[in-house]
Image (cartoon, rainbow over all chains, first blue to last red; front, side):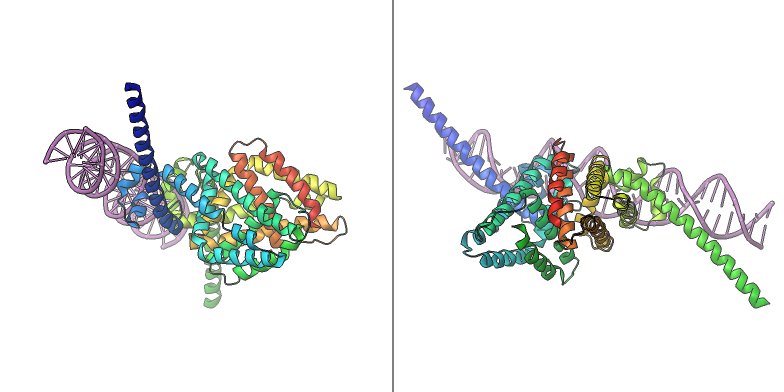
Length: 212
Length: 212
DNA sequence: CTGGAAACTTGACACTTGTCAAGCGACAAT
DNA sequence: ATTGTCGCTTGACAAGTGTCAAGTTTCCAG
């Protein structure tokens, strides 16, 4: 009986703790999302905790309460960003019934991303570069990189499938190609080069048929 | 006669000024080179003028004497870096008499670069990302990017030439591909992944025959 | 209702940052 | 010999940084 009580109490305690954890985590994500705003605007180098706080509804102390560290906060941001980013093209892949449909859907989404999410993406490239200096970032960054490679691979696989062909390239090379083109286009787009996006789209359109 | 004198005096003055300018510029490059050491070690975000000075034979004041600004210094660093980097593969291209020679020379140089100049290259990727945030960097970064694209194109052109074939890809796509692969390998190499370099070389070896 | 833990704010700390004015010796011109 | 410019050093300044301890509010279990 006492044992049963103890067991029940423990279960309750565990449930409470789990709830607290969940709340804690939800708050962390809220804070990370707020931080991403400022990080996307200023970049890693120029962003301070205080600035993040000022551009949000929170005080700078909360960030220290929820994150052990500035790096901890930014790691959380990166991880959160990943979840959003990696599934971006899945719907296009799932719904396309012909090769043309996939191509056009993919291109449209690329253009939209470049136009509307430029700040988030430059942050990604910033953080990926930071990972070359800061070991604390590496694990997360490498993992995201892998996910992005897989994402590109899913698109390419479907692209080949729709023409009953086999891909002629490796996942790594395909990702390098598209990521490199995207990165270049992003830089030129941010530099107010009006031709950046259309030329990028043309390039992708030309490249796609060569992958299989 | 007076006119002649004035003309001569002016020429002397001009020569003196030119000499001073040259000395001034030489000093700037010395300082930039010293700064590159620290920048390559710490990255843009964590590097301060004082730290640069401490890791060099100069005092922090000199940097302010020769550069109007921190950005001015770093722009000079970037420009100086470019000159060194862009001709790296030219000798291999010039000396290769067969396709295999070119392939092996290229791969060897790539591996050497990755192993020995990793710090300089991570700085390049760092600064390219910074250019997405900092307009002051953009002009130089875009120019270097173009030079690198041209460098890759020279290699590829020769590669096609040696087999009397035509390249099947655009300069932009080729650069994106190799730069993307290189960047990924660099990150993994810096993360102490022993397989990064060999796998990268394998990948390049597999990719090369597909470009024409 | 109440005590106490959790969530959050505030202000202060030690330190670093870019910037720059004041001063130093060397050296060339007068 | 003096003056003044050049190259450079030094030290100080204000503004900002991450961090954290102390205090305040909120909330809920007993």
